[in-house]
Image (cartoon, rainbow, N blue to C red):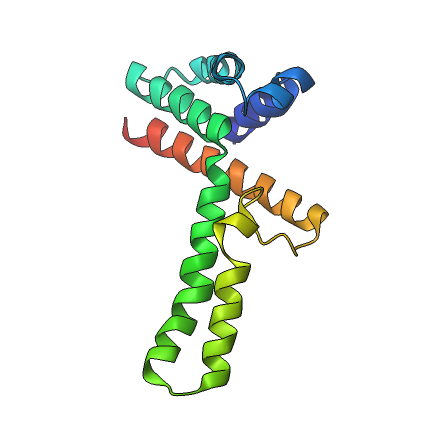
Length: 148
């Protein structure tokens, strides 16, 4: 529970609007936010390695928007792969057309903003990417604190 509270405080309470707006375009702002965020985890007395992983992963996830790649990959594997497999064992042209439509829908060009297709309502895609981003941070933090 404390890890969750530290994450929420560091990512939402201590992050200014300016940091939030600049961290994707500026390594300096992303680094400043990552350090500010990670300082709170000192309360848990992590090893230097664990603290470095928390700080470094936070920097990378936020600076490069890595959660959108995770979401996009998940959609490709769980959405397109089963259809592709079915097309390999079927001669159904309708299924092949559906697969080609899905390939276009899930192309990186169509998904690069949030990892979700541009047809997904902005409020939903925005909410889902925030949840995925937070889950990624929390998972890495837990693993670092548990194993390092």
